[in-house]
Image (cartoon, rainbow, N blue to C red):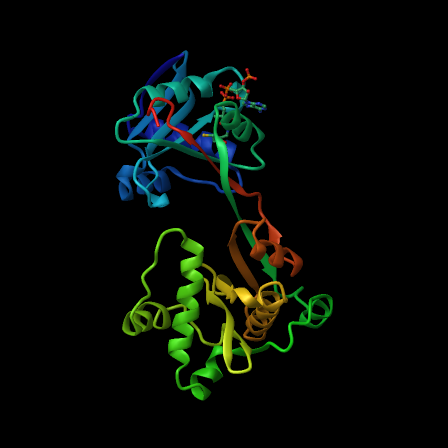
Length: 318
Ligand SMILES: CC(C)(COP(=O)(O)OP(=O)(O)OC[C@H]1O[C@@H](n2cnc3c(N)ncnc32)[C@H](O)[C@@H]1OP(=O)(O)O)[C@@H](O)C(=O)NCCC(=O)NCCS
């Protein structure tokens, strides 16, 4: 077994793509896509290694800073081994090699991920001391099958809460923008806690939220208790599929939680997306969160979840 640097040759890219497509056949990649990704984000792979056995590629390993997690000092590792050569210690050898070269003075945490249907990837990470940090899955609701009347009968009655699309409220409610900005900010801040989140100025909110290309007041629904705004849900037209909307943000005031308000908001929003001619709703998130449970109940089907895994970087001394 011999380890060397990835040399950016077509041969290395072709071998990587072949192995990736054997491992993840439902999300095929190409040499061009891999080259583009490497050019767009050179910091994704600080160190990329190739494992060869008798001159043929047996596996790849890469590591780089997990910039998408927004916290410095987290090193992400990814390893893939040719399916026919798994369970022979190759993945462990690649991991050791990556760790031997890791900049442990600036990095404190080792991060990785696999998908729940990759038994080998999940077991491998657990064996090497990683623990789960969270999971996220793509999910989809087929609006042709979505029957708002039948579903509403099986859900809690959230009255006296009432539900309105945002569009007519922009006419009838003088301070609608302030109310909407307040709800959107509070639920976004809760989602990113404990990181503090500055409230956008009215101008910033109008520019970044209301004027966003995919924002539509006909795809936002507001829950009201009398004249109080107590919750919201927002769908946005998908940039990749003009028949789809994406679940963007949902929140309900704490005192109103547990009364079926979020489910009712979603029923209304999905019903209006269907009436506007959309064919499906797409979502991405934790299938075990409260929103995940609501989506399952309303008929979403879930793809296997990606499972984030971490451990303290073994030699960082933290
Ligand atoms: C993860 C992966 C790289 C492991 O490669 P590998 O060469 O098979 O790993 P190793 O042989 O070094 O396995 C080390 C240990 O992990 C555990 N393990 C690995 N695969 C396993 C499996 N399918 N079932 C149960 N345990 C497994 C075992 O404890 C194994 O030790 P053992 O064989 O002595 O029992 C390989 O399964 C793979 O390419 N998976 C798809 C890509 C992926 O999910 N990568 C994410 C991880 S970064």
